[in-house]
Length: 355
Image 1 (cartoon, rainbow, N blue to C red):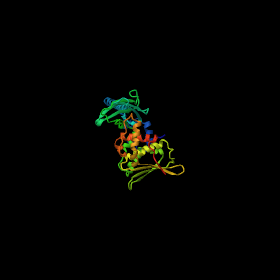
Image 2 (image 1 turned 90 degrees about the vertical axis):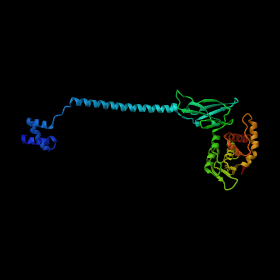
Image 3 (image 1 turned 30 degrees about the vertical axis):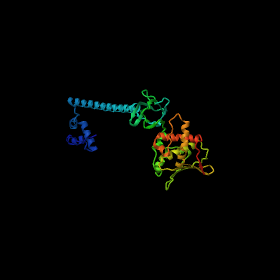
Image 4 (image 1 turned 135 degrees about the vertical axis):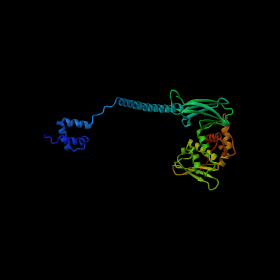
């Protein structure tokens, strides 16, 4: 193929050619000339510039920077690994060593007073996934003893939730397991009675407070119910209207528990005079149980006397003129609650049915 470009023309085009500014046709013509002209080809090479060789000092600097970069990545990776390890150690320490304060919802306990002047407390963990460590028995002001521990996950270090404490009762007025009152003035306190006691309110007109009282009790074992407050004039009455059909005299233990709860409500709602539990039987016939402060105060001497006679080995239940006085302590409320059960169970007290 004929080469139309002279050396002079090619040398004029080479700067633009090297910079890539010439057209494809010019590029083809220049390249044909360069293939047959060593001098112009040498000039093209000079214009393009040969790759520069890095100085030895520069090469060393580059190698140093690469090493620093590699060390930096290693340090970052090591820092991340250490952080992850410390986090894992912290979590393990929290779960297996530090734990959380005792929660009595997952525990049961037995209190024995067989030895005079001593309180033998045995605590058991109900949940298999919980162990206890760092048990402590602390003496607090006003004759309070508090038994505490830390709950952790089971491990070879701590694999049991059981504990036994033997306390001298001299000068001791109350014993707590964590924040749960379990013994007061010679009486073992159930969690339910503690909840009832904590829920007490002076006014029956305070509907939210009355709701908290009822939630602490067991009325729902007789079925769902709605609440009525009669507070326009005395006597102040609280009525529970149950929706589940029930037959009078055929409710079994639920009926005994019903009177326990009714007595407790009269005791802990300060100005409540009467409580009514209203039912319908399967035929739609209405009937109800009503307990009044006046009636209960009248029958308390007989109920308490029979209870103390039958259970003379335990601390006697106090007799007060007014059922409201049993709300003064968990111990008194516990004994009233227990006495009401046995009064119904043994026929000492026979509630009246209203149709």
